[in-house]
Image (cartoon, rainbow, N blue to C red; front, side, top):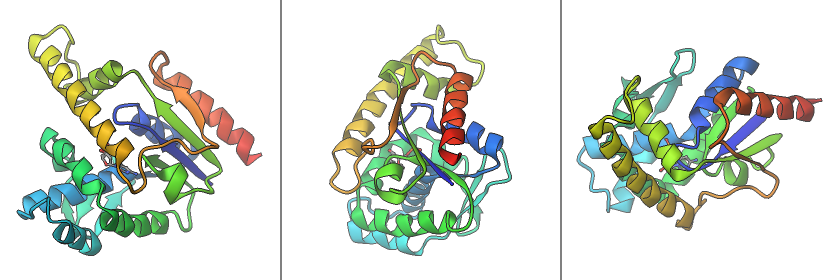
Length: 226
Ligand code: DC
């Protein structure tokens, strides 16, 4: 079975996909991590991000792998661990540019489908229900209020911090602007834009706890499986 979870940055996809994969014993496929890995490796190797051919060449030849037993899942690029590097604000800033290139998407699409060839998967991203797995048994489109999404992102980076701290409040404002910019790029690119599949179930996570959403999706997936 494939459960597809799409939605904008910070809508809670990752946390919810994690919980579901543990609850069902499914493998989790974080497709955003794959685009992040390509972006990070390009920057690390000094590739000009405006050079679509050079960026696509990296995506075509890069071996991206996951240790899905680890929690959180570890990510490797040609055998080198990049789990932390792909989550920095620097990678946040460049990833939408890289992920808009059709050749990059084409290269990663093949890897994403191969990952799910012989196992049950919870896959999260932007185009899972529309492009990667259009036949997924359950598709969820997760949204949340932009300020709430920015707050979640920042608190994820600084566990235990208070939103009343001046530097945390400032980081929330910066993150809010970055999310808006990325959402805009992701939703308006030509290839596989961020979009809900026609048959997706829409869930707004602003006012719900993770547990409530996980329970709701788990219930939906039990119904679909039956
Ligand atoms: O989910 P995330 O924030 O880690 O994703 C990082 C970027 O990758 C995001 O800005 C858009 C892109 N992405 C994409 O284009 N398609 C996907 N299926 C997943 C992510």
